[in-house]
Image (cartoon, rainbow, N blue to C red):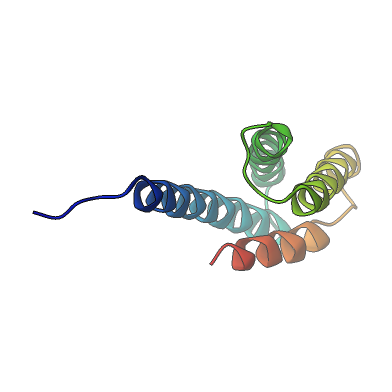
Length: 115
């Protein structure tokens, strides 16, 4: 019989959480890329901005939680990135000429850092 240690369970939980975050970021990036494509409908941009805004709001709230186990400096950096992304999304929402390419690049970097 295999004995499971609490630390093993905790590590598994963290891996599952990172995988969920990666999948959510993948979806966000896909929507952003579709919205940024030439000739994309305004509805695509609205959907991408709404989804990505909700995702980063949840991520920032989680990072600000005392239960989040990441190092404080990393949490602070990720919160700053999240706030920047939310501001960029708002700018894109109010100004159709504002592109989403910077948000896509940063989102990909964050997603790639989860693996």
